[in-house]
Length: 322
Length: 293
Image (cartoon, one colour):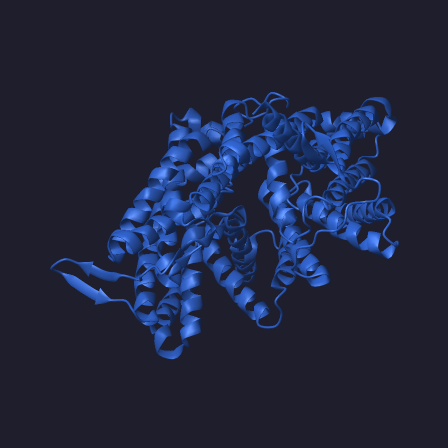
């Protein structure tokens, strides 16, 4: 992948975006803040997913599992154990990472459609457990009345997150730190090896690198970020239902990554913004938004295969060259 | 106890036959076209809704309604293949899955728009009402009919693939697309007809399911996952595997609800994962080398 991140245009765009995100609660309605949090969560899930898909070349169709594991672990901690948000987020992410290790161990032996089918199978295993294991997860009623909790580090910090604005800032900081980390990761030698595996696994193996080892590591990091995104969900909604683990939820990160451009770092973020904004603007007019969204997807697949970010880069680049 | 086991087995078998009809089309389309079609379950759902509507339009004649509905879905399949699937064959897997997923969304909402979001249970077709007494329990006649029909369709498929020239073209194209094309087989035509035939089978499964299983908007996304499991267990592209896989899953579902109601669904996907890990090519599929998998 070409290095384009250094351009001045990019830096200006990113600064503008950051200022906009920081000032958002001052100008936006409560609903817009809520929508922005949803966009941030989906971006985080999709960025985690895309480390595996766009960078390593493995299409997971079961990432909702890790998202749901993070969400249920955090929800249960907040509801049953202690209303400490930081603890819920950390433990939830760790549990998701642990599951990624076990599930990834089996999945990374395969690639292509067999990898996708295997992740789908594991994803649905998690879904059926959440759906049927009523004693722990509440079954199809889900978990209700989950408190948002407080952000507290004993003797250091105590922040009340009751208002939507303060929770927004918490989610924003978590997402920015994660984005920074993932950006460094994909541009490190680790990230380059992953891309090498995507392009030609055999060649990478010949240089003495254990391909499966790297794939597994990518799987764990990918699942951990999906889990992290999940842990941020129950404090936002205060409820949790098994649908977050269903295979149709697993399709979302696939969709937004391709929508934005899976081979670009910003792709999943742009895709998430587009997906949720398009959804909101269609839902305002009709309850049958999926028809329109499906139609948009068709145009995308048949027309803009590099994703929106890829499309823009190509056009901007060719114009600059002239 | 033995009676319960046999009785539950019969229920499992009738369940298996719907899954088989859907899985047969899915695996056939994958074997020939190389596309794993998420929207195949939506064709099943359309078959069910259209059968109900056509039956009502034709004055309550279920069989004519079923015939008309499955033909409509097959024609729809021709359109889908020509306009949307044809440009997809050379694209990466992710785009193919995404496009078929787009159709899942479209058909789901379309069905809600046209027929409304409610559950419906249409009446059993004439001549197949009532129930038999099996081991002292009432077993619907319609289920017996379905259990008989499934193997009949399997036999028919086998005859078509082995004995007709169309079947020979299908087998040739499934084993090597380039070679089949080189010896003068019209691949475009073949793909379209195979897709339409798969759609017809899915619609047949959907239409036949309505007297027993309720007609509801979510039925497409539910059956497609069952069919995926069956096709993967049997081996992608293998019809024999799909049939045995369907019987296996049908029985597992029926006995699962009896013995392990909490973990029944879990075990089905567990089985799928185990088969994929141990033998990615499935029980009856072609052997897949590890580089390829």
